[in-house]
Length: 154
Image 1 (cartoon, rainbow, N blue to C red):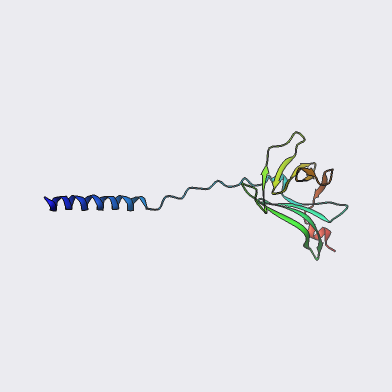
Image 2 (image 1 turned 90 degrees about the vertical axis):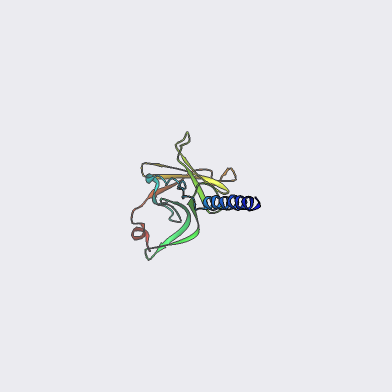
């Protein structure tokens, strides 16, 4: 009788271990939701004609804003910030809200503020806010320039 009890006990333990091992098997990988890319109408390099100190560059996954200049067909950034598109706002990342405000702007949120952008007739209007206050007090206007390195190089 004791041998039967010992046998049943070992069988139960081994069955439990087998079930536990079966549950440790790798689980299938689920796709992670990706970030929606920037709208195509906004992509490219945007410059101020009268004052080529500032450039806005928008790629599929990044928003780049800052100063600089072209020399020998190469952009040399000065105080330029690059924000990678993300689902959440952290240092060095941004979120792009494609829902438009009443004035037609789309919102790019960054860690310490936001940018409002809109494109009309080939011109990018940009407003910059830090800690809830408008940095410039008026929108900045940028123009889309193809082959800017050739056009603006000194």
